[in-house]
Length: 231
Image 1 (tube, helix red, strand yellow):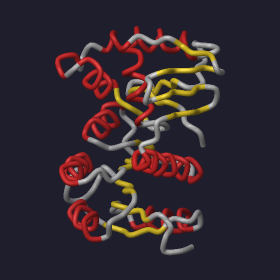
Image 2 (cartoon, rainbow, N blue to C red; image 1 turned 60 degrees about the vertical axis):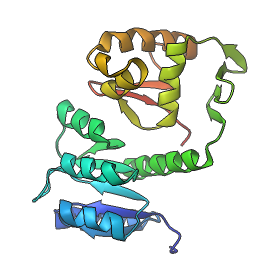
Image 3 (spheres, rainbow, N blue to C red; image 1 turned 45 degrees about the vertical axis):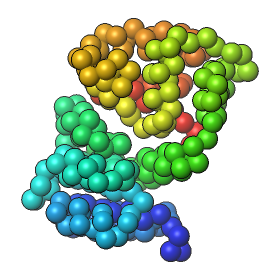
């Protein structure tokens, strides 16, 4: 492991969990710095310049959602929530506050590693600002706003394209219903989830070989949608 390995800021008050993550993620090539509280984590986010943050919601001083909001005021640092809270409202609240992804305890280290690498890839893509997105047989020319499936151009409506473009910007990560509705239709429509169901159904019929068993446009039940990216 070298100093160029990605650095994770782990904000977690349980020492057993911290030890486990430091050992398992360290073995997969990540560097770890630890914070036992929300306030310490916020301070270390500035001083350590991490590549990503793993955040528990149940901290002793600050609620994890408050930590996310504080981080988002000053940073675009990718944030993965790792929490024993499994209620949909907890996931939605954390993601709407600005977290990038959510993984419930217990979890597999393989899945955690995959989620972290998806976050890192998203950051790299944003930095490169590439003009083409590809996954499987789906190809999107972002500069010309053209969509292709298996080499054939697919005609999308403006709203369908805006939904797809937002999912591409967060490829591999969950995007909440609220985020999609606000970004595509505006803040007055954050509760109009039927809009989203209709248009996602249309998108799946255009982009999926079997819309009932989608490969690309995946549902996170009660939370939002995820565009499957290359692993």
